[in-house]
Image 1 (spheres, helix red, strand yellow):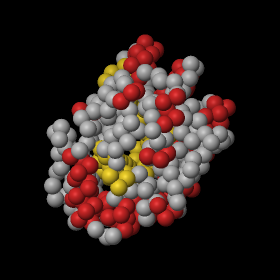
Image 2 (spheres, rainbow, N blue to C red):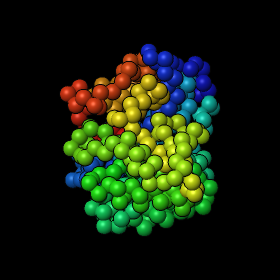
Image 3 (cartoon, rainbow, N blue to C red):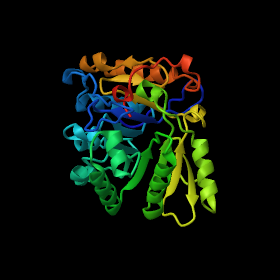
Image 4 (cartoon, helix red, strand yellow):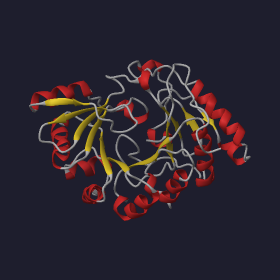
Length: 328
């Protein structure tokens, strides 16, 4: 396998060409909406090896999935993460491999990530207020995150900031964060909290409200139609800003009709929608070296992908696991 053999279209005429791969459930932060008290960690024996992940990617590429996002937990806490990215890039047909990180360990691994082929990095950052950052994450690591952002920009990487706003003082964080897009050539994106796991107990801030605040606060706010990646964010340009402001609105801007992704957890479960607890486990087939079965199960997951989520109707949500168990 390796090169693209077929372009697989799901039952609702969506081209599934993107896979998010969690490589660990571990994290070096304790964000209050994710794992404030830690989690029951998976056994190391249950976590897929890099070779097993590469086998899945090779079969996925054969089905037209050519874009991959490496996530966690925090992916950089897993030893030799850049080596995995390099191995995925070596598969004939892969278009791009990107990374989502909290940024704390990024600076020390940046050179190796760049040499592995990484050109784009998403950095999760919900506030630039030092005390609030410590309150949210449990650690005082803001300086290391800012160092990583600046060094990534200096090295020519495409940088996106992913932010989830939390409380009644969200406007302060909103304006602070978008100031980064004014100062630096980066995208700052605001993600609506999905009501699964601990997120179901968090305050939901509508991106519709944020767009309204943006347009009322700045002159000449225009839609930015330029392609920024492979996800569902809608972007705006503001006069005088070096970067763009994006909004990923799973609740108030439902984008299921264009959803192009599936996810794989660190233990090898394929999920085609975050809203539901349905999964297909690849681990047994991988450990039996049955790549034909892996391919069949990937096809099954894509063809069985639901038409839409029901995050706006809490009674219909069947996923109860925290995001750290699923993958960011």
